[in-house]
Image (tube, rainbow, N blue to C red; front, side, top):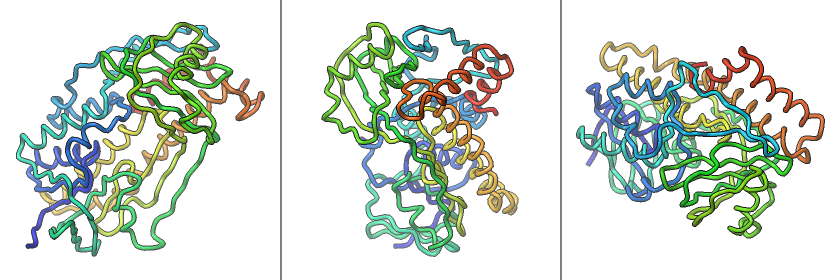
Length: 380
């Protein structure tokens, strides 16, 4: 049996679920296909910072409910340089960001979509996309034709591979180090980021009784080199003070990179979020870019459906890429500064001193601090 819908959304992550919720509330029919089961999707551990722009976007579309959570909204975070805590002012007028574990946001978006009568199909195996000018989506024994396809299935999904050969250009930068990312069942204490000659470290809340910690490490490290005892001792060394320890629930190595695929559309297939671009986690802008893409695409579909005006959809890639490159620049800048200012074995002593001068400017220059605050709030 062949079905038809206005938009097939491939992937039930932040971008896909946000898009589905916006479309549903504006009378646009859509189907979300997700290859994994609901339990798997809602337990995937990811970072979770929704900046001011994202918070305002959800409110403007009537989706403020998805921001509800039991984690502390206000986080007493510090910035540590060689063990010395430096003051950070988070009181920018336009900064009402929310620290929300990404799996909680996904769960809230899923609940909101289903409550509104949305069509969300988990365990949609073997998804294929055909005829991008008149889209056909197949999975299992099912066939769905669509006006548009939103590829929200991440960096390793099927959407980007459906682009015709030679259409996409991949731009990337690989950093010379990785992060050991650790999910621990312990409150973040201390909380914040630490720059040290041993490398960068971070400890951030992921709920009242959980934290995500990060340790800069070599690209060729493996998990066997990082037993739990070493994780806690290294955090203490880099923060320069005792660190609350506890059970480690998850541990993985994450090479840092910037990636952009251009263009972000081919025919009626549009890429959103990680399917189109990756930013280093240091910038905390992955969710920001996913939400921006979702809103731009949603506005385009709504304009097309209600006014028969394709202009916003036609310019989708250009609009998104202009924003993406702006935040790639910020992501590369903050990643370089925070890492170069610590362990000089990666970029050299000259770059370390330059990076520290740039850091000092953030604390002493109102203009520099304001620009940084705008990027962190997502309004730059």
